[in-house]
Length: 172
Image (cartoon, rainbow, N blue to C red; front, top):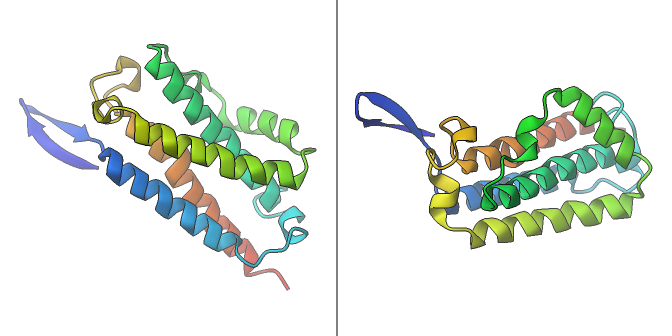
């Protein structure tokens, strides 16, 4: 993020839509690279992060990315996004884990690809100020919607890609 002077205070400026799309593509490529070469069986081994497997991590990422898609839809309809009402992230993550743990790998993978495509298209289609105006939505407390996407998708995927790479060093 960049700072600029406006009036007597500094205001945080968001990335542009194009920069956000590039960040999204880069983070997904890093995550995909971290997954390259893993067999389906390896993706089901517990212990990548806590007791979670790679499949569980992917379902976790899908859940958050789905929340971002929902948030963007809610914002377009002038509603406060439900993602902002998640008070206890650990509790929310545990609930999502209980929902997804029994889902087949193929269904999780399909959602992993499909939700990401949906988000990418959505970001391409909305007006730039909708994403980048940090004063447009008071409930964003001075941040633009690009920050919501970066925090819950881009940076999140990068974090878990790092964890997968670290876990892979222990595989035999």
